[in-house]
Image (tube, rainbow, N blue to C red; front, side, top):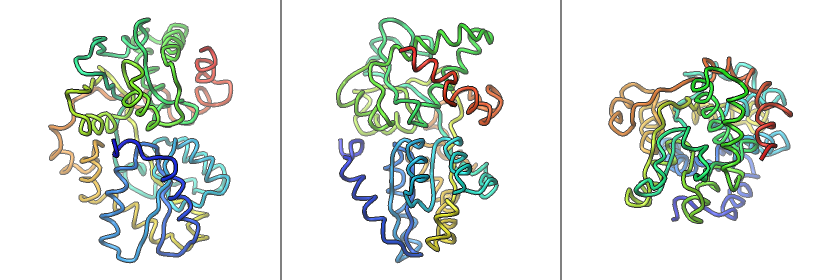
Length: 327
């Protein structure tokens, strides 16, 4: 229970503690279900940098990006959506070439949307097409506030594009049915986990593979089962220095060292221990048995890149709004 249900009061405390700035203190604004990962990352980093402190803020990354634009003093971001970092670029807070600052397009690890069902898989959910059945309730957060959910939306759309051979009308109908099967749209991934696990609402939770693995580890395979669909979407976890903030705080060097640590064998191992797929070849090989094989599509291959996704799907009045507004 304690792993997955940190209260809002705790999150507020983290933010409140981050208001007095010095060159040896960072605020990392991160994605909603990254709490446990960064508790471990921060502990390991601080052991190597005595006297340093790292504060955390966790929420849906679209909400985080807006908060930073409105004054949240985050020195670094560890997001789960490229478009949310690009939002900060447009606000003049992050450099336009941020993806060149760190390896692998500034994404130190990756995951994919995966399914979590209740023990025995009573609804026999195996793939994306099962999620639009009339007898299935699906839980995932609001894609208008959650990067996690945007990957779910894009992965489902990618599946439908293949299944219906690019028939846009049928793809739109599929996504509309999927959205109509969601009884509650929580604002972030951890709230959606609470809805499914604690409140026992829904037949299947769609979230990052790392979260499904964490839930099974916490509650046991006798409570929940992970289902990996036939195809999913590569979910990258972009990191960036918030240049304007880091320069104001005098924390640029520390911020770079912190994000560099995520690429070290130790940082990669911590990520893999938390259910994320490592970029480091040696670490990935060590953990290979922990991760099922899956055919992964990319945003670039299916949708033509993030700029096109933003314009066609996530912009006001776009395809996401059309599907979401129809429920």
